Image (cartoon, rainbow, N blue to C red; front, side, top):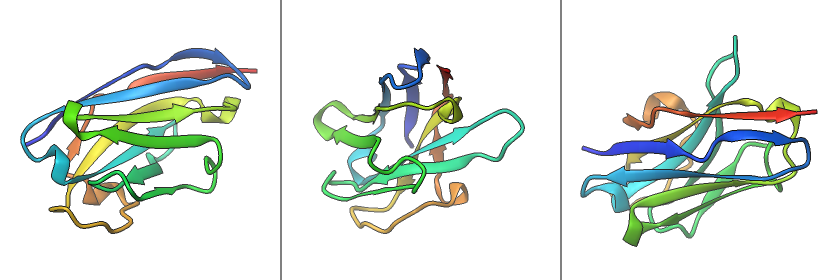
Length: 127
């Protein structure tokens, strides 16, 4: 069982930066692939990026590649999403999610494959 709490969202101007955090509880966090998703009003929840259980591997959606960076601190049961050069189209509710992969790495972009979800944090980018 993994419980996730997202935080760090807010209002930022275009070109600015935000850092989201996802605090996890539960003994299996270090065995999870962690993903970030986002959902804009009236749209499907979409994949943003993911990080392997070790933190050594990451994968990003094309729309955020080069601007967003995912990292994790397994000692603190926390995963981060650093967002730079933000654009108005990045406005959405952002969710972290956990896929219990048992210390293996596979690129997991489908939301159906993630077992646990945070409550979401709102990111609004003004133009």
